[in-house]
Length: 431
Image (tube, rainbow, N blue to C red; front, side, top):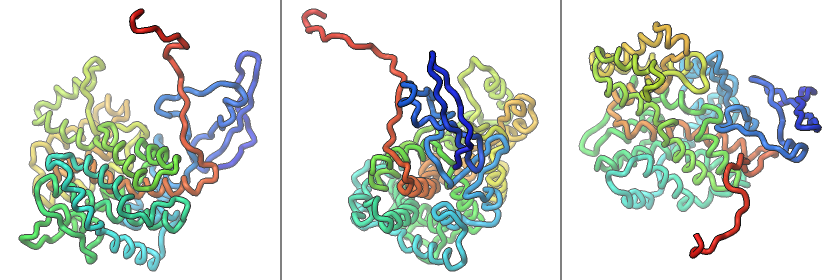
């Protein structure tokens, strides 16, 4: 971030204020309004922060017009083709791709932290069996600060490092345990001889009565799902983690806050909503009816899994996810599934119909990820927990970056007040 030497002038009544213009390494220039209130006595108004940079970050960059996603400068399609999830985790956490020795050490540290404190198993039993896995994860991750006191001091770099590894390593275990608990099956402990994604699939689908062999195609598909959801700039849950972190809260509380935000259907629940929409449509012959409804502005129905708030072009993650979807569905032999037929026909229409092309409503990553997870055997209630497993490294990376930022301040948004001005209390008998 550099001062361009340029200024933006704001004239209010008879007063003119000059605001510095900062230049990022990529993206539009940014008007620095930090001293606006002190100089002009006014706030800016930006619901949803759609035009406001809340922080400086060097982790992830999105060019929505180009349909480009970069992690530390590396395009997501290159990473998805040549890398794997834990290597991307290292990249996000430390800023560079690891050497072979660094990667081996990092993978070993993560692998040997996948077990959770044995007393935490009792914590799970306090939830109802029909509790949503996300509800369980919010509680359990928040409770980690009660079990891991030696990694809650955010001012100690080593404790921050230990907390980071613990969160990345234990999140799949916690998510799998939440799933097992919800279906009444016993927990499956992690194994140190399996890779990250294979371990997660085994913890979700194995049972003590028989051996479980992880299919490498399914493991690779899961690894890609995790990789493609690892970080996505200053989205709602990441901003939540940063806001919670700005108060000095411990890392486990901050990540639990991120999980809670991710639970929202407009954020992490999009792939579940997409699959439910495909099932609602039901058969290919009903697609024209729903396309007509989607084009009708007076109809509340919206096609889920198409378009993106940030990407004004094709979602770069969707291209990679489509490849995984084709591989998984071919492996499992369910290409003729009715829901899948609906998905493929909708995909074809979206890429050819002038309405979709004009509005750039291309299939996004949620469109394909829900199909893959459903094919693997995950219920829709597990879609968002898997998203949380993937996004943990992004949250942790953003948290670490924020803690080390010398310009970090506690978050305190302003408001445009629209309520009553001062009025006097009226005794109850006179109301």
